[in-house]
Image (cartoon, rainbow, N blue to C red; front, side, top):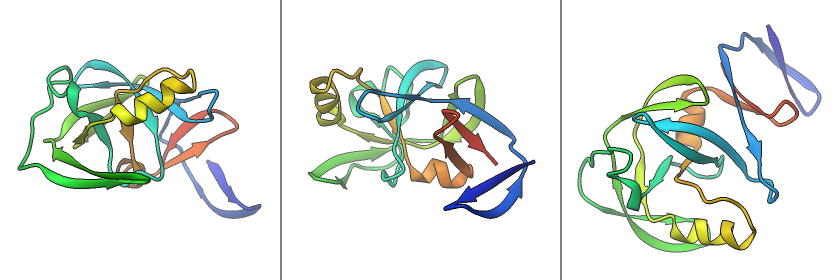
Length: 149
């Protein structure tokens, strides 16, 4: 059993099912090694992103199948962009199979350009709040782990 603490208050005890190693970039972004449909990926963990997404230029690389028509998507500080939802795909974080996950295909060129200017490796996608909430994930900053409950 592990106790979760929030601002020094015990909120409840839960058993951790599994955990995944994360890394912090020099810009303090959280990165996780992953596999999408068996293909290696480096994903940014972003609690402020409502949806998990993959760079649209990598759709074939990750064998992602579109679901539906393109729609307008907006991100923090960026104009609306065209996006496409994918069918659910096999996702593995670290060594752990975490099930199926749909992604939004989105042009992440601007994200990677910003990371490159900071001397940080580029990413293939983002794990957003949709995944984190559905899988009851807690970020343990001290232990550098994603904890699944």
